[in-house]
Length: 308
Ligand code: NAI
Image (cartoon, rainbow, N blue to C red; front, side, top):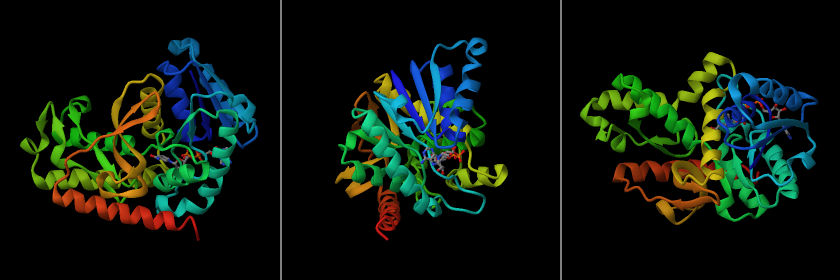
């Protein structure tokens, strides 16, 4: 199984690293526009093979798409990340041009690939990729909900003072500080609703911390985060390549689901070998439905910027 990651920066290289040491794919091609950069990252990762014990072959390429031929999955992490004080939405102009040309290039060499879009603003970049390539909706998947949900579970586990693995939670909606929706009502700890253990005030704080989780890290690091983003992409790629059919919140094209159409936004999805297998209908209450409609409006406004 072959995976190409376009953009060998912080998120792309971390994703390649996780894919390699977890043996998710047999081959990973890291491609970047910066001369020698992807080759350097690939060599550095490969020099871990004997100490961490993996067999995945990771190679680098400076913009040579022939090396990416016949990839099963292509991850797009190329583009600029945000700096402190910036929103994800401010990246739209530059990243739209990059994502569109990258999608064209990868499909020329891997016409059957499933495309995972990571570059921000991710929901709009996913929409752009679908429209620009004309691919069927099951083959273009935006990664954001997996990361936001892992941050949500982290903050829940901190509040519960319990291990994160025992906590279940999901974030849907747009992948923006103001548009994501941490579903506290259905979050659980070992099968019991977290509301049995945490007050509404604490749950509200967990939700608020989750929503600014990326911005908090950008403030601390001086650029956007990479360990959890890279691992979240690898988690999604694993479900695709190995047909795991995990339920993962992803940004996909909606055709009436959750009351929305002609928009890519985060909803719970079953993800398998064909990409999107099924959108899962979680019964939202009226307040959640209202938040989802508002989130969709914000994403739609962002998509309108693609035309301007
Ligand atoms: P980075 O700056 O470390 O890496 C980006 C890489 O893309 C650079 O190495 C750059 O040379 C390369 N690049 C730029 N144009 C290219 C092109 N045309 N072809 C090939 N490579 C090209 O940035 P980082 O931190 O890895 O973030 C990448 C993107 O992912 C950003 O847009 C960021 O906002 C987004 N992101 C999305 C997340 C999500 O949950 N969806 C989470 C974290 C970051």
